[in-house]
Length: 494
Image 1 (tube, rainbow, N blue to C red):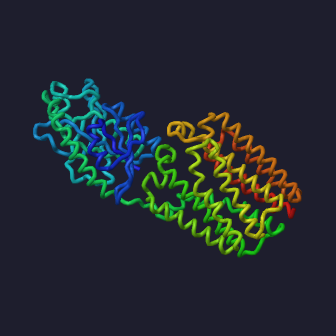
Image 2 (tube, rainbow, N blue to C red):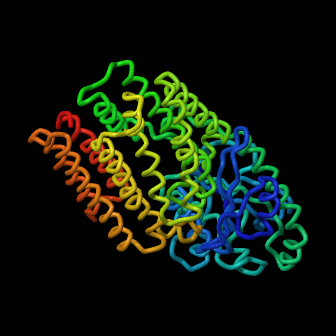
Image 3 (cartoon, rainbow, N blue to C red):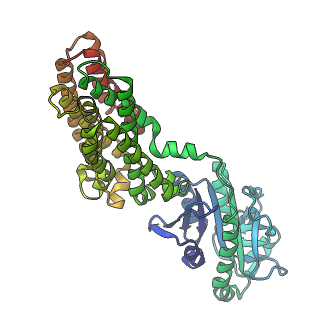
């Protein structure tokens, strides 16, 4: 992810229009997002405000919260040399702290030598830039700066300094609007639009040659559907199949079809979640780096993944028999639409719980070919529903502030972190009671008591403040789910 930083809206206007950038935030500074196109990556246009402090603050936030990995500071500047005329576009090879240079006799810090990767603008002449906190329009300040630099602006060195501190590349592309002399203000206003347009043209020419990412498509697809999460949901499917077969594993053929249906359904659900939420993901700094908002995958690729998941799911259901095929639209509708709930209700967390609860229930029906009559599968289905619903509430704690800003409905956003954890704790307490009931219904015994204890322990760990929130969701939630699936398998037939 890249970020283009410009000081003012006037400088940014041609670039925003050319990139068809969409505003996503007004504070702490105006931020726009643009989609990937061809070799051009997706990224942000940030209007930082004038001066080094504002530019540095914006650069730090883009790195920390938007996960930007390359900063490009562009815009207008003044020239300190008579042989450099307004209208020229230059690449900054090194940047100086002009304020330190003007401060007095102490030796100023060495200039920042800018990294040239990717070397997309190396055809532009390289110049030395001095950055100051107050505009320069003639006088002694101009004379003293001219002894050390060829161009002057107010933001470049600050952005470059932040990038250097983070070990990230920084590219400065500057267009000369004036000669930083007594008539500089008038020249700046007269040349601003034309020079900003030329800067935009040179920026776009370079961006269209951006090097392709080394990350393979297979890797991006695996991250897109969270393969590791999908695999860890299989034990609950197998537990449902186990119960459907009367306390033993069904044939390998049935298990493979159940697994295919589960993997297809989970792929469908995850892909639709990413597709439908790509706008919300973009507004959330934690999720802005995901494949679709970051431009590492296209919307067409996302829809293709969803389509393949749906085809695999329907094919498996059709092969498992007419009952599964007739019932297959019900889970599919839930999987496709559950992510929309966050736009309407704080109980959206129970949508994903319902989607996953169809897993063991569907596996049971796939084996039996009939309606549910076994209390064990009812308990396992209810356990699954509450297990993941509670963990989704916990997971949403990390997005509390972002959800409130973007209008996403969630229990943490509505109730606050403490009360949301109380609700999640109550959900998991009921899930733990269901796990105990499942243990008893399926025969109990010491062997099955081990995963029962692990399940309850994992529920408790979800509220340990020393564990990071992402860890509480994965792998702690996966441990609870796998252990819960082992209760009926190790407990024997009901």
